[in-house]
Image (cartoon, rainbow, N blue to C red; front, side, top):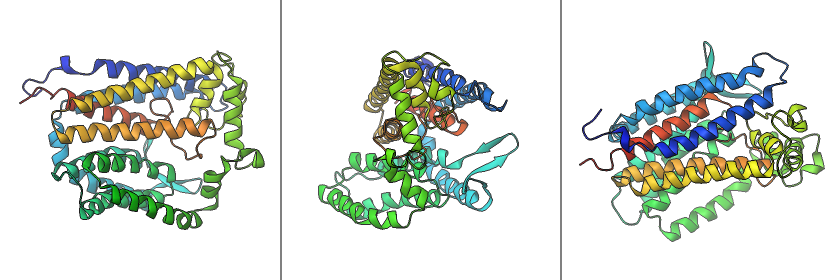
Length: 365
C-alpha cells in the first residue's frame, strides 16, 4: 500500500449503498427464477453472489493500484479492448444471431462490458493532456474517434444497447472539457441527419425495438410484447406490491428476462411503488456520492474518470427504468447491480474500485 494511503479514506458509505442494491437484486433474482424449469436457472441467485464476492475482491485490489498508473497505461488497455472486440467477431459464440461472448470453460466473457471502463480511462487520459479552456475542432474529432472504433465493432456484433453506453462518457468528457456551443449545435444537427440513414440500415428487429415502445398495444403478441407485459407487472404491483415470490406476471413467466433486463418490472410488481421508489432513491444516493468524489478528486484526470463512471451508470438506470415503463425503447441494457450477469457486476465493482482509488489519494502530495 502506497504511503499515506489508508482504507480510513475508503468510501464505505458508497460501498454500503451498492451492496444494499446488490442484496435487493439477488433477492429478486431468487424470486424471478424460483419456478424456473431448469435447475441451473433456479440457482442463478447463488451465481450472482459468487460474482458479487469476486467483484468485491477486484474492487479492493484495484483501489490499491495508483489510478495514475491506470491512466498511463490507458492506451495499452484501449488497444487490448479493440483486439478483444475483434476476437468476439472472429471467434465469439453465436447466440440468437449475435456474437457477444467468448466461451471459456465454465463461463462466458463479454468484452464489450469491460470496454466501458476502458473508454472512461481513455477519455480521461485524452482530456488530461488538453489544457485549453475550449476544445478545438481537431481535439473534438480525436475524442470522438476514441469511441467510434469500439462503437462500430460492438454494433457489428450486433449489440446496439451496449454500443450506446459508450456515448455518455464521451459526452461527459466533451462537456467538462470545454466543448464550444457551435460545435455542440453542429453535432446535434449531424445526429439529426444521420439518424434516419442509420435507421434504414438497421436490422428489422432493431427497428422494431426502437419504435414498438411508442405503441406496444398494436403488436402486443410480437414486438410490443415485452413492453406490454412489463407495464402490466408494474401496474399490478400497486402501492405495496404483491410480495416476494407472489408476483403473477413474474412467477407466470409473462415478463421476459425477469432476472435480467426486466428485473425492475419484477421488482416493482412484488414490492410495489414504495419498493421502486426506495430502489431509485438508493441509485440517486449512489450517483450523488460519486459526484461528491469527483468534486474532491486530487486532479483533473481523477474528476474526469469519476464523472465518466457517473455518466455510464446514470445512462444505464435511465434507459433500463424507462424501458420498463414504456418511455424508452427495449435495448437490452441491464440495471446496474440488480440484473443478473457476471460481466455487468464485475464492471460496476471495478468502477467502484477506481473511484475509491481516486478518493483515497485526495490528500496525497
